[in-house]
Image (cartoon, rainbow, N blue to C red; front, side, top):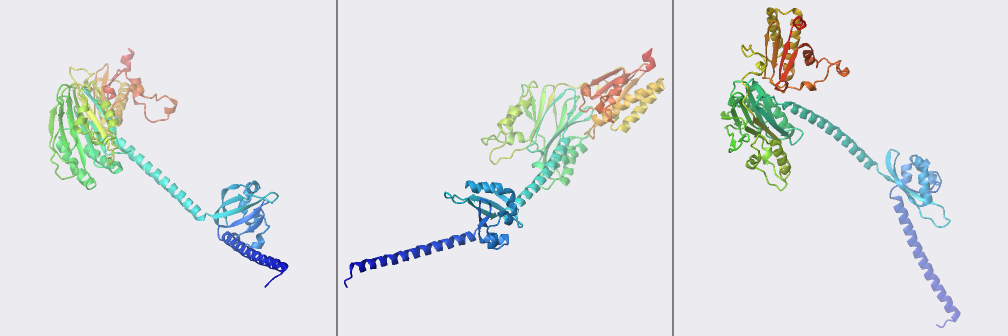
Length: 555
């Protein structure tokens, strides 16, 4: 069929039109589908609204209408603050973000019983078009609840930690009270001590106490385990030692009795290594017993070191530990070293352990060198932090024998030697007052006036009470002693407690304003005001006074 040119062109244009219409239809359908898809996405994400620069709602998705409880039509054109009142304080910041086309930092708010995180995004706009922005509310209620729960649990954990720390501090103070604050001042003997618990509280303990005027007890123990359990069991060990360490009781018997106590008291499977020695201060003979404790070392300059072996099993394991007492003769210039295994069983940073023999070889034998410097170097070289290693408590006690003790009792040292008076022993204030009453009767017999007798009584009673309260503190089996010589011209009174002593120059003045209300701290001050002479010996644990009748002193 032949078509005219006009008809042909018309047909072609019709076909192009149909193709164009079809293309437009298809593109339009795709746009509509994409739009519906975007609308569906917009309506199935977090609550969102589109607002203008005046924060009026232009568009809201379904989740927003649902949480607002209002119909879509009632939201359009309304201020955002009517739908979300919690955003009112942030209106200026939101408006500025929309106008500047930038994101406003997220803000947390509570709305309708839920917690939301609000995000505002300023939309980029074409020239002349109005400023718009999108507000998105992300429901963070569950996250906020979890965060609050975490905060509450952290607070509860902090309270529990504080309580545990308080209890741990109390345990540390209790353990510190179990250790001697000051070692007794003993003529001819010098002490070196180092105590390093691996934790705030530890299982090591030591003690040095005078059993009587001429016998010094030395004790060291290591309770198996670490931390609070070991510390509390160490308290049981020390109490048992103080109960059974008495003058005249041999060291094997002390351990046998302690073992009986600890078999009933220690946790099943726990045990204690220990060493106890009793040194005769007049003969320097040491009687000792060892319960599986690291062997103490006796160092004598110029001679081969000697270890004190002894026989006996751990305390608290079996009913019969087979404890046997041995003895060794010490001499001036000797050094006796006792320690726990923490000083030689821990490793250096390369994992190498020091060992008993290597540790002992480092200890200086000469009394001119202090062992504490060696211990510091060992602690630095072997910190006990190698892989798989657990740091242990470290305790060290050394006795340097400087000389033989003067056989004259300290309480008699400043009194006449021709006819030494009787030495009177007491362990309580009541017993001390009874001795003061004997002194009163003695002064009456000599012919002292009542007024001067009362002055002497005041001096003697103050010294006896101080000896009990301070010199015997923490030493249940120890005793103090006193004696006196009374003539018509003077009364010399002396008291000795064998305790740690004190420096009279450091005593506070009871006349200071802040001390006027105290009911203690005046004893030595009163004695110094009444006595004509006062002498402090043995580091303050022996005090001798001379009191004269006032009539005699005036004439």
